Image 1 (cartoon, one colour):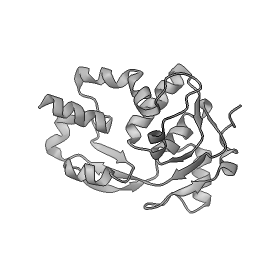
Image 2 (cartoon, helix red, strand yellow):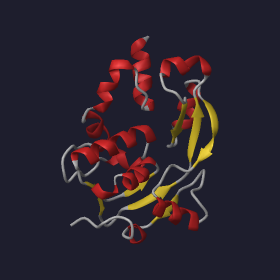
Image 3 (cartoon, helix red, strand yellow):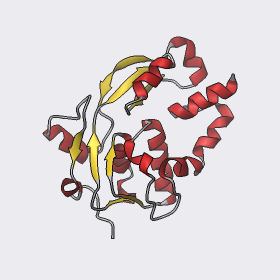
Amino acid sequence: MRNLYFVFSLLLGLSLGSKSAAIGTLGIVEDLLGCISSPCIPKKEFYAGGSIAVFLKVVAKVQERRITVVVSAPCYSACALFADKARPFVCIKQGASFGFHKSALWRLPKELESVAQEPMPIKESTGANAPLWFQNHGYRFNGYRDPEYSSDVKNYLDRRGGAPIEKFLMMSYKQAKKFWPVCQ
């Protein structure tokens, strides 16, 4: 049963006691990006986004290790949040664009709160399969919100009506060059 909860925690970016050490290693960077040194050219799956919690943990590791991440394709959802949060270590190439949308908030049911071992059992999710996964694991939908983008990206989104719920607000390569440096 503990193994099931460990898998559950990895998928959500939660920690369970001593097992959380596995998340803190460079393994999470390699799993998400496909590389652990500069310049890092992410694997294709990175660009689709995923768990905000996991992407933010990778931001911290990229900053700590000073890994330059090269974005060269459309970067959606949590990928766009990653690029914003890790901006000093992200450069873009022709073909890069960014897709932004609101994240869904899911509340962990009371009976699972003690298993999660965290003070606020609400998680943000993005991605096409996230709602079904959360519903199948007992989470309850709790609304939408904008992820915490930097002020200039937030202003960019706000000037265009804000991040949508069911679609992406796209930032073209030409627009993105105002926010991220072009890779040399």
